[in-house]
Image (cartoon, rainbow, N blue to C red; front, side, top):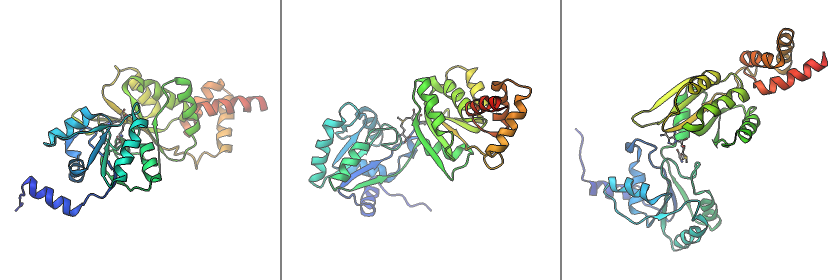
Length: 296
Ligand code: SAM
């Protein structure tokens, strides 16, 4: 039998279990499914002396759904420098301050890093109320290795900068994760396919929401699928697996494969063929192919 308690009982019991300490509490909120707001997150947002949020309309709506009507202090990139001293003053009086963003875990591609840095510097406590985060949700459903991963936030929107960053990260021996917009998805997948080679990847869209979708495949396949479709709606995370042929294809073996391919192909075609075989980046192979051709 399941015992039921009134919300007042629950609230009193929760307070006993989780007395809210003075300090800054980083509170994760849902990335879609409202059921993902934890009881502890809700309690913290209810009883904190001050709730600081990215957009008071968004957090206000979430709290009203739970019957909580309270004042909220907005904290975003345009007012952060002005708000930080006010929040630090409150903490100096022993206040319990909660920080949330519009969705997910605050500070993860969201405001709050400088606040946390200054709060630590001022000697106050910083505490996590963990919960949803789109990056981790996408990683764990991607089917790609989870033992080591690198989260890159948003890639630059300018193509040249994006390609440079992708090139810099091509040697990272880990699964790679990026946030992306629907508008840029096809172009980014194309740059990832060119810059990272034939790796397995996943595109996770609208996680925890009604139209949640995950597509898995090689970067080349995903790039051509999205190049042929309308701009996808909603929020997106790209997850790219590590270069898995690293052990088999050492540099000498890659050079040999390139030399072979160059006997019958242009450097560009040889780079593409060897990229598919080895998982190495097409751009890196193209450069290497040109150098090898000069050596011959
Ligand atoms: N702090 C948030 C977190 O921990 O999830 C992320 C904030 S960032 C400004 C917003 C980006 O996260 C979106 O552009 C999208 O790339 C990703 N995102 C957020 N919610 C998502 C969802 N439900 N499904 C897929 N991606 C999501």
